[in-house]
Length: 152
Image 1 (tube, rainbow, N blue to C red):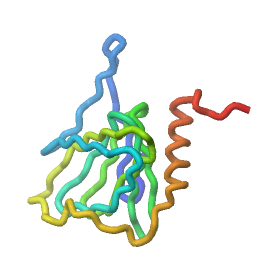
Image 2: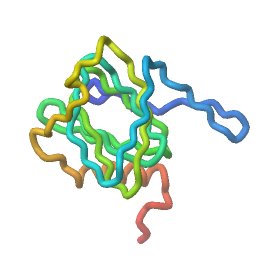
Image 3: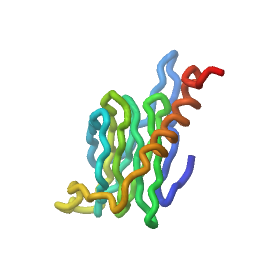
């Protein structure tokens, strides 16, 4: 998929073993399991000394990235294993517009001692466009699950 404003988005590679897919784990200093409740619109976060490597393992969400006073909306779904790499210094947040909890694995790369403000939410400077976030998620879901396409 490539880079979006220094954000790396790439499909997770797998090796087939019979009917099972084995996905390569991400190298990290620490692994976190993150649960994003249904109908959640998170504020922004910025980490000064860590890179997040995010993989949705259950459900779906949209990662919001603020760059140059514009939001990018990056959809992530469990049916399409994709690693999203968010370098230090980039404002980002998560949106879960579904009725189910989204579970994300974050393979954190540390670049120094965490700063106390790294996990303090920052109010978005202007509202998210939730309709655009939902449209991006619907587009990815439709390409992964053709049966979800509207009939007619």
